[in-house]
Length: 149
Image (cartoon, one colour):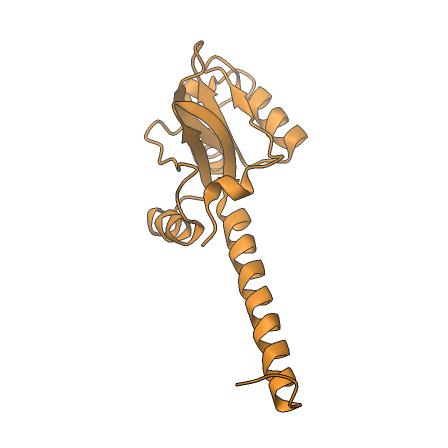
């Protein structure tokens, strides 16, 4: 079973301080093509997460001005996070049950990266596809008498 740590390679670690505006956060998210940023204090400790959903429900629908609203006002403070040693399958289940799309990964108090539910499901699907291909090749070889059953 794959671990979260195996998906973190090369992923941007996008963080912002709490006094950043929503507009600045949206620009950073657009620049890095990510759906969430981790909000950190001056020492780099996680304070919360600001997501596309926060932007939609807490800023746009609420009629707030993105250029004047600070992300600390509208971020999600109670944040579920993953650790690099967790299995992808159990992490995907947990994210789905909590209705979470973005998972900050923390290890030893440090931010290691952000994964989306889509990232995890894509990897799990890729693993299953490889399994099916290998089983299909094995069965076909067995039917031709090239392998043993």
